[in-house]
Length: 226
Image (cartoon, rainbow, N blue to C red):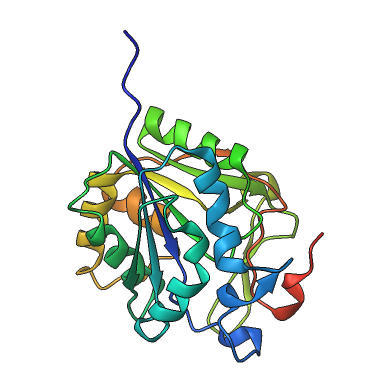
């Protein structure tokens, strides 16, 4: 008899202020090919049929608006909207705590401003997470990577073949990433992403090939389809 299919959930983070967009609305609420960016970022996960619960993290003041934009999901998936914190790290931690009652085996954490995510990348991250406990999609670095000091002076030049860009969704065994976030919430450090938190407190993080098209919307020009 084969192994049982793991119970998997998704957290979509969209609690930021979108200040760099220079637009009056949250970037996740803007239209992309006549659909809200937020909805576009969720639908590929829904289409896989592999996830039992969805948690969408928004600013408290935007939850009602988010519920309106996500109305096409009603009756299709079990989703919960919850409020974020002052940082992305706080927001993800809030999303993880929202999932405690359902207690999934695996959770994938995805940026609500990455609407070009595809089913193959999602499935690859999920499968690798089941296998290893944690997985992140990566793409090769295309720029010359440097480290600098607070004054902007270059300290070192990194070999491009040893640097990559991490994307989302990032996948983790649920209990281990929840406990990792719990410890990170009280250690006073600031982390770049969930993989860094897991690496410190939960264990090694595997990688799978990402997709160059899976970019994150930061500026209004990023809304152009390629």
